Length: 323
Ligand SMILES: NC(=O)c1ccc[n+]([C@@H]2O[C@H](COP(=O)([O-])OP(=O)(O)OC[C@H]3O[C@@H](n4cnc5c(N)ncnc54)[C@H](O)[C@@H]3O)[C@@H](O)[C@H]2O)c1
Figure (tube, protein in one colour):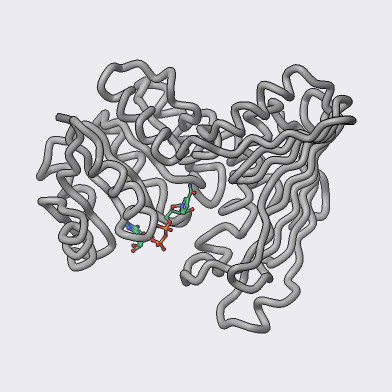
């Protein structure tokens, strides 16, 4: 039986806890949060036997086979380092943090210990993304566009630039990651961000609410990802469109549409990517075989570099070269 600990008691901790609670050979044994009261409430709701006020207490109190780090962007760093010190594998939700300095150190320390890690870039596990990757390998790609157009999540940390990193680091990172997964590495980033609406409507909004980022891939492919959080709740669209010599591939979280000269085919998503990413991590813990993990810390770091470079570019007004 694998003994799992959780850090974080928010919405996404619930999602992972539900999946883990339905798995054989896995037991969630402990949770810690920002306060003992929150950890206790979460433990009671999810049937977890022990709750703690801090990670140190949890690690001293329980032998653990792995820990899930399910906290907002500003709260990363110390947790990862403590787990690495103790040699405990971890699953961590995206994004890796607010910047690249600490994630780079963490990546280097993980490398020294060959620790098993997995990062919550769950879209990689979707069958439609896997198919898009396969098709793009066979096709001559011209360019791609991506869009994450939605409303502002109603948690206080998200609207605060110093805590979330902004929409491109926090949300659109998924689109950067899917593009990297399908097409390869990015070597140039140029971004423009703006503050149009949300700071006038709500207190404490410091994140830009519109942005557009141009990416150049090592292969020569160019892409643009635009995002906004000005839309009303319940209205939005998220996806990627690829333009190739063979036609158009339109991906969104539900389907992949393939548009060719005389035929349009639609493949609906069949895989639950959240389940698949958890199964891949648990399988790696059980067997030591990490082959099913599609995003480990070192790979996710490359996505983080791109999204952080976009913020730097938006601030400086200059393109940023990555090497
Ligand atoms: N992969 C995905 O599709 C996906 C979807 C939703 C959220 N997420 C990610 O999961 C992370 C958490 O999001 P959420 O929706 O659960 O947010 P949330 O606001 O619902 O919950 C965050 C929780 O973290 C806790 N927290 C904050 N700082 C902490 C700290 N230092 N130590 C321990 N706990 C701390 C808060 O008390 C809160 O309970 C975010 O990084 C988010 O991007 C990923």
